[in-house]
Image: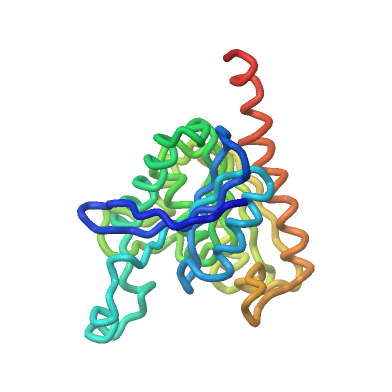
Amino acid sequence: MPSFTEKLKVSGKEMSVYASVPSGSGPFPAVVVAQHGGGVDTFIKSICDRLAKEGYAAVAPELYHRITEDMVKSSGKTRRELLNDVEIIADVNTTVDWLRGHKSIDRERIGVTGFCMGGRVTWLAAATNPHFKAAVPHYGGNIMQLWGKGEKPAFELASGIKCPILFHFGELDENPSQADMRKLDAELTRLKKTHQFITWPGANHAFMDHTGQRYVKSAAEGSWPKTLEFFATHLKKAAAPAKARS
């Protein structure tokens, strides 16, 4: 199971992308993995590696690539607070375009998942890029808020979602809270978007991160098979008819 770092150009800037791919020549279904607040770190790379073991080419773009230490010091803001939606969308779109142009990728079988801020990015990505066939946000907060530049917050872009969504929530989480979950559910229901929401008992924010202090084994081990089943349904089983026709 090889892994490597690729360099992509986004509006003249260089963005690193961590990639973990199955052995063999493919073409493989792919999953974009949106980072959490810590960046493309050990946890995010481990998610890519786990997905690769399941037969997906998993890639994690480094969304902080424009942000320097000087910017953090001079602004008094965190790297996360310096992100903006217009640039996030550009980074995701560039990653998807790279995947769709790669000979080892099944360009019609691409999903997206993410954790914490990456859960929000997952919603935003699904709402603004029509090529995703499945989206799995994990405890994505701030969906009702606009980050930086842009016309509308991610929540108000939900009409653009073209794929099924599986959203994992922690029962004790305050962002997104259970009230947030009900609002998101009502909006997707109103728009007649296919979705499934799961709340994990006793779990707080970041329950999947085995490197952090809020890791909850029961929720992490319960949610992961659900995620794999969801991706298998929409990225693997759906691919069989296309291969039969070729």
